Length: 186
Image (cartoon, rainbow, N blue to C red):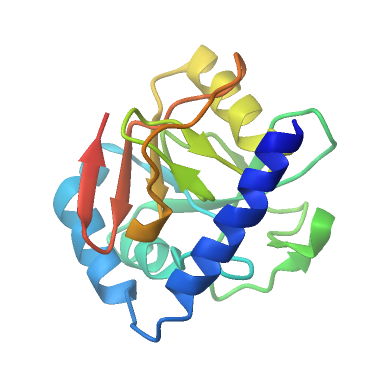
C-alpha cells in the first residue's frame, strides 16, 4: 500500500499544479460533459462537493438541476460502508460531514443515483482510477451496480491521466472521464 500512498502524494501535487495554472476550466468541463454524457436518461444524478484542488463539478450539477434533474451529494455514514446520497439543492445550507466535507443534512431525502460524477486523483486509459485511499467510491459503485444500472463518470484535469494504474480486486472502473480536453470512454 505504501507505493499507492506515494502515488497519491505525487498525484495530489500533479492535480494542484493543474488547478493552479490559472485557467478557468469550469465552462469547458461543463460543455464537454453536456456534449458527451447521456444525462437525459438519468433522473437522479450525484456529484461531490469539491475539496481542495479537486476539479469543480458544481457547474455541472447546477446545470443539470436547472433541467429538472434531481441532484444528490454523498455523505459518509461510517468507515468501510458505501456512501449515502442525499438530495441537494444549492439554495439550502450544507452541514459539515465526516472529514469536514460539506454534505446535505441527515433530514434530506436519501436517493439512489443512476449517474454518478466521481472525483479522483489519477485515471488511466482503461477506466481505472486512483482515489483518496478510503475505498468509499469503490464500495459505493459496487453496491449501486448490484442494485441497478449505474454510469460512473470521473471528472478531472487532463493532467491527471496516467498510462496505467496497478489495481486492487475491489477497484471499480469508471465508464468514462470528462476533462477540459474532452471525454474518454472505456
